[in-house]
Image (tube, rainbow, N blue to C red):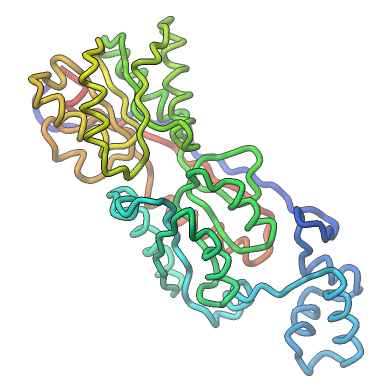
Length: 363
């Protein structure tokens, strides 16, 4: 085992941004919400004139106000209270929504770090945050928070199985930005790390350390984990190794039964010499369970996690992991939310991942 706690890093390709323009024509169908600029084009006026007319401003002639109001009504256009308030700086609060049916989700160290980064970025803009955890049964609360004017927009942390619901909110014009995986049919702005590259770096590192039977821990129904698993498969394929489905154990982020899942998997007494866990908390739980069974990390089994939470550097042995750039993520999420509110073309941001090598994978 190497001496000291020196961390080594390998960095994936630089961050990418992708721009996706909004439609150029008004389309009152449910899948494409009419924008203020569409009404302005049809009425032959500026968007600011439409905004003033719909707010009842006396600066706009009555005949013009009535014409614009009638046009908006015929197209089922409704003023988004939250977005309007954010533009006018009347609502200084942004909703930060953590998705998940488990109370443990919101206390996950990575989520808390990301919330802190978002809070710092909002503070730079003189904004505050309202933190909410929403379970599947409370999905309607997301739009209600904005429509009521309680918050000016939403920053959503995670996608889970809510992708279509998030798409629906975006099509309805709810101002939002999402931390998660980059999905090809997303209608909402996304900030996320390069999950596929992160999974590849983690698995390739274990292969370079001599591992040949590498287990994967994570639920691939979760979009981010699915991409990490794709990176895992790519590295195994490049090494000419067959995938053993018994070495894939599913578990949900924030599941309080993680230790029960781990013990059940270990009881099968499968042969493995490496583990890639899709979250640091799972990796740390795995190392604890292995130690109780007399299986030494990294001498017998090498372990790599994902996220690089603060605890990862302080457990014994210190955990090798894939770092996600939370400070950049918080700033990018806030920036994309404000771009959405201001009517800029929707875009997404892909952040680089970085392999942090510690003692859990090197002997």
